[in-house]
Length: 402
Ligand SMILES: *Cc1c(COP(=O)(O)O)cnc(C)c1O
Image (cartoon, rainbow, N blue to C red; front, side):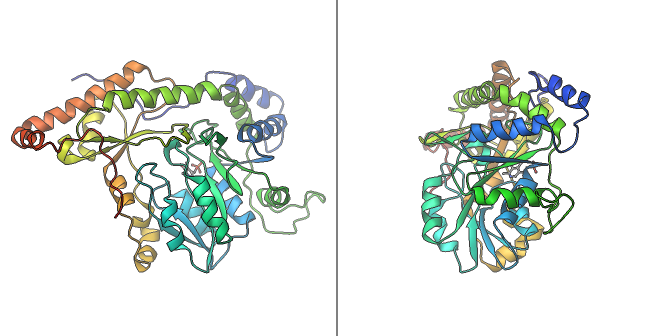
């Protein structure tokens, strides 16, 4: 058995990132103001097609800052997918509000607009769709329903920086959008985030809330309780380096995901997400579903097999409505999210980063086929029967809900 160490993710810092960070340090502007911060906020807003971008200390604080600026508070409900990183729901909780979970679309794996209406109550204030794994949610449909009910929409674009929806960049598709620049995201500065928006009315309050509530006109006067959610100039310097190479980074990530799709297309029991024709993705983690009956073993056995060959993977997100802080309230509401549960139980994230070679992808996919065959041969009789009955489908998909 071959062995090769392939991590799940790695930031690509091979451009001017080091030089700019050193420049920030040499300038002594290492705290939360400086030329790299101004430059990054200007360039990021431009890339997202918005009037404003405000840099934050991470993607979670970006979410909390956006929701706090919109006035989310105790008693409010905010509709979110359960199939996402925990931060989406936690940010709602920080505001004293309640996240209400709805199911995903079987094709895009993002919040299903058709499930939105039935979750709206008189307490609902807004919706936070997540552009999951780099694929934009169906924003026109979500915005139309939200508008009918007087709700705001905030995009959680943490996993999809520079993706586009019908040709428009994510970040510009709702009242506000939030981003993460954690080490494994599309672009990174270690820990960082941003909020983008057009509405000039939001900017003053958001900047005040980010900076401890300080009055922009009167230094050290604090008319409101804010947070310290600022980003440093050193981190912004790294982001300025990333911005220069963002097109190459996204293009390479797309190539890697396409290479996986090509290699895995015919493997029985492996299901891939189909990109919507209105989506240009900014792939975060290449992912697939594992149907144990057809593949020969469970998702977790596949992960273990890959780990012994030196290939790091990650299980798909455990649905948030199953997590201890949220499960009792979700149960009380009779939350039932079959597609979210199925993706959570069978999905796996595979190594995805720009420095990966095509040969790395081939190595990983060969290992996946190998693990499948090893399990299937032990159950040859069952496998033969399956093929004979024609239930072997290469295009495994999440089933459409009835
Ligand atoms: C990564 C991520 C976040 C949080 O970002 P951090 O920078 O880690 O705080 C929020 N939402 C989603 C969907 C994410 O993937």
